[in-house]
Amino acid sequence: MNSNGREQWGSKVGFLLAAAGSAVGLGNLWKFPYMAGKNGGGVFVVVYLGILITLGFTLMAGELTLGRFTQLNAIGAYRKISKKLTWVGAIGVFTAFLILSFYSVIGGWVINYIIKTCTGALSTSDSAALGDMFGQMISDPVMPIIFHGVFMIATLVIVLGGIGEGIEKASKVMMPALLVMIIALAIRSVTLPGAEAGLEFFLKPDFSKLNGALILDALGQVFFSLSLGMGIIITYGSYLPKEENIPQSAVYIPLIDTAVALLAGFAILPAVFALGFEPTAGPGLMFITLPAVFAKMPFGTFFGLLFFVLVLLAALTSSISLLEVCVSYVVDEWGWDRKKTTLTLGFVIFAVGVPASLSLGPWADIKIFGKGFFDLYDYVTQNIFLPLGGLMSCITIGWVWGVDNAIKEATNNGKVKFALGKVWAFLIKYIAPLAIGKVFYDSFIVTLF
Ligand code: PFF
View 1 (cartoon, rainbow, N blue to C red):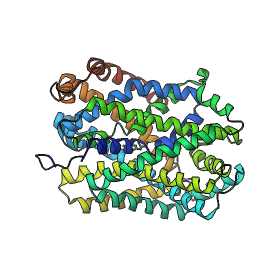
View 2 (view 1 turned 45 degrees about the vertical axis):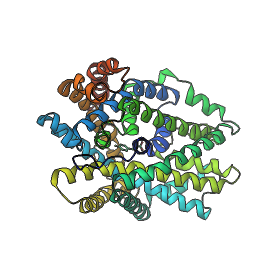
View 3 (view 1 turned 180 degrees about the horizontal axis):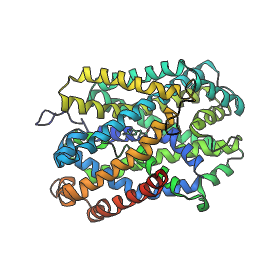
């Protein structure tokens, strides 16, 4: 606790792991490889890294600083800077709410795959059979909803434990284990006969595939993967003790996150080519390809089980952060009891996720703006709300609060070194808002009207 009675992180490592735990999740393991697969491989990776370097680090530092300065939840933080900005925090909380509703559905698939691995149902490298199995799993009207509920309950239980006991402790164990596992998998995938084509696809950019939609996808993916643009990092920053070194954390978290995303790419894409799958398969990529890799490994069932358990844990350290943003808002702003808030929100978010699951099966024909619920939640959050939230956070920090105030906070009044402070100030004030605004305008507004 600090002097205001607000809970704080128990240790530096605990905070870093929790923030990295929020960042590293399904976005890295499940989404990054299939987004890269869908968007031409290497060219997506290059654009992703470019955005990471210019905007990812910048916004991470900005949001951590804003959170620690205000010591408030996302909405409170924006309101403290200016009453007129309250809506930015509100959009962030709403985005977290909506992301969690479908994130939990995917978390449910992972639980389902843990069970399937145990029963031996996945022990085949027959791509057609694995594809069918995945299709059947997600389109079932009942089972994915049950597993979605189980995932949500697990998320609730951890969040009920509070910051130090629940989130921090869980992350300390899960993160290192995941890293070891994903490295082992990447080695197996890269050494499969025929993996070279996949490596080339993943590493050699073909710039003829570059277009506005790809850049918007990559931009949204950077925000999604780093948990930026929606107040999560602000909320986590608000639990940071004053002596913490923000510039350093703002480098570590994105580095860890990107390392895991790239490793997931190495674990999945070479195997896709080696085993004759299509890189453009979309959301099923991880679920279809990796079981085939495990089937080709000694002790495959064991490694498969371990892998999906770790994916589940990574998903949980992210889902708890999504729920925490919503809970933290309701507790701070509406004065609700933490337990009641967590349980109520958990239930509502579960209910909102149900149509996302059904849209992959019995409700496949229901379309809103040409998209089913699952795709709609995904698109609206990743390609609209996150970039918008990111843009507004740059404007808030760079122009309303002011970079000088931000640097004062980030450096703890000059006590901590912020070597690139000037560069950071320039990026957050000018480059980031212009770049996000331009991508957003070109690829979204223009296509809409
Ligand atoms: N960053 C998480 C992932 O990559 O899976 C997902 C996520 C968590 C997105 C928290 C957004 C967020 F605020």
